[in-house]
Image 1 (cartoon, helix red, strand yellow):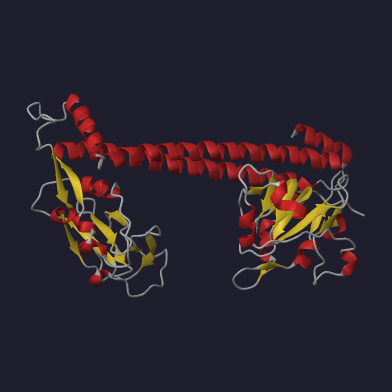
Image 2: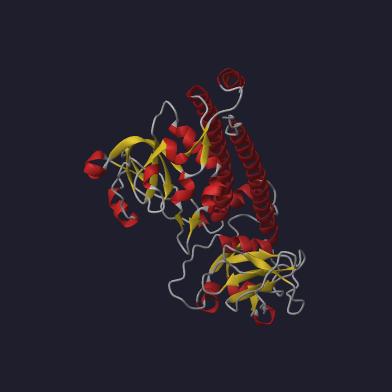
Length: 421
C-alpha cells in the first residue's frame, strides 16, 4: 500500500482520466443497441451450447472451458481443435440471473459469454478491468433484463466510465488485489477443510451405530471406561438387541397442525416446517393448530415420501400432510435422542413414490443398547454436533469478515478522483 500511495503521488496527484468502457476495450461481437462508432473492431469466437461443451471435458486438460457460471472445466488442444483461442480476456455471461464475471489468460473455448479485452495493454490492464467489473457487479447486474434467464444491456455496460490511472498504478493495484484474492481463497479452503473434517468425524461415529462388528469395539471401549456394569460382559446378549422402529415410536398425522395461510413473514412467531433441506419455510401468525414441542418433549418430523427428517424441540406448524410426527413409545425406556441418531445412520433410499413409514421404514431394525450406553453415545454425538455447529458459525463469521475487508480495500483501491479537464 505504501508503494501504491507513492505511485499515485508521483503519477497522478491531481486525479486520473476516466474513459467509457467502449473507448478502451474490444468485444466479441457487434451489439445491436450500441452505435457502430463505439465498436470499430470486434474479435469473434465460436460459442457452444452447454450440452455441447460436455463432450469437450477432459481430465487434466490445459484448455479452459469458459461456461457462463462458476465451473473449473478443461479440455485439450486435440478436442478443442480450430475452436481454441488463446488470449487474455474478461467475460460476462450472455444470459444469467446472477452474472459471473471471469478473468482468464491462456487457451480457451467458450459458451455464450460476452468477451472483452483491452485495446492497448499499456493503457488498460485486463486484470484491472476485471477487478473494476467485480467492483461494479451490483450495477452490472441491474443491466441484465428479461424474465427467466436475463440478458445484459450491453449499451449500458459499454457506457460505464472506468478510471484509467497510469499503467504502473494499475499493475500495483492488480498485485495487491491478487494477493488479497489468494489469501481469501487459502483461508476459505482451510476453513472449509476444517468444517469437513469435523463433519467426517461425526459421520464416522454415527455410522458405527449400525456396524455390528464395530459396535463390539465400541462396547469394549465403554467397558474399559467402566460405563458398563462390571458384571455385564460384552458377550452378554442383553447388551445389544435390535428393535424395529415401530416398536419404539408412535406417530401422529399432522392434519390439525397444517398452516392455512402461506403468506409468511419473519416478524411472526410460529415457524412453518418441512422435513426437507429447507426446514423452516417461514413464519406464521396463526395461533391455532400449533404443535407444542419443547426440550423436555421433543418430536421428530418425518417426510413420508422422501424419508428425510428433523429433530424438533420448539413449537411449530406444518406445511404438508406428507409429514408424520414421531414420538417415543412411553411403554419402553430408551433415550429418544439416541433413536434419532440411529435413524440418521440408516442408509435407505425410497424406491417408489409412496408413503414409506408404514410400508417399509418403520420395520427397519436398529441396535438397542442398555440405557447407560445410549446416554453415553448421545453425549458424544451431541458434543460433535455442538462443536461442528459452533465451528461452522465461527468460520462462516471469519469468512464474512475477510470478504468485507477484501471488498473494502478493493473499493478503496479502485476509487479515483477524476482529473479535471
